[in-house]
Every structure is written in C-alpha cells, then in structure tokens.
Length: 167
Image 1: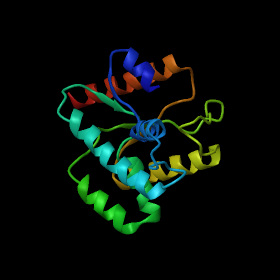
Image 2: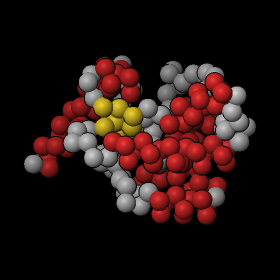
Image 3: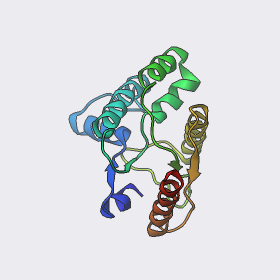
C-alpha cells in the first residue's frame, strides 16, 4: 500500500520498525524485537517521533506506514511508566483524521527476515493499535480487502470526502 501511494506521487513515510530491523541486521546490532523488545520499542518510539516531526509542517497529505501509535500501543499493555512518558512526549503531536487501518489479511501476510512474528501476533498487534487509536480519539477508516490499486483509490476518495466536508 505505502509503495503504491508513493508511486502515485504522494508523500509517504516508511515503517520505522522495519527500518530499524534492516539497520540492525546489516550492522550486526541487537536492537531487534526478537532479541530485545524493550530496546527495540524505545528506539521505535524515538524514530517514529522524528519521522513525524520531519514532515509535520508539509502542506499536503503525508501517509505513514505505522507511526508513534505503534509503540504507544505496545507500552499501553506492558509498561505503564513507558506508556505515560511516551504519551507526554507525543502529546502535542497528532496525525490527521481519519487514520486508515489495514486489517490483518492472511493472504497477504508473509514472514521475512525483518518480520518474524506469526499471523496471530500480527492480529493481536492490530487490535491493540486500533484500541490505542480509539483511546486517542482518532477516527479510523478500515481499508477494504481489495487489489492495491483499488485500495489506493479508496484512500484518495476518502481524503477527498474529508477535504470537501471541511470546506
């Protein structure tokens, strides 16, 4: 999805977690979710905030592949102090509504060198992220399960509807 949005000329921000894993694997690092989840999510928190801050003042839509909601969701259920600290840090930052969510889709789910968790864990993570989005008062729009070009069209039509309702 994020690649299709980029090819269509949209500004996109890649998934910080995948970038961290790629970097750590290339450099023999240990900040990997299957080796040190705590350090990984701490780094994910900081990198996600940096990504947001880097594009925050652009005057066009920016599509994030995940974002700081992901580490918030992780800490929310596992570490109250880390959750509250990150919540304070992102307090003034906010993604635009609606937030598009892609539900787990077994036909598209693949394991690779960077994503080693199973479909069940991905589903649990998705629900945790959606709950966190709800807790932070984000309006969620589920992306339908259809071919990539149709999903891209769906997102762009939704944004057009939102922009027209604001005018």
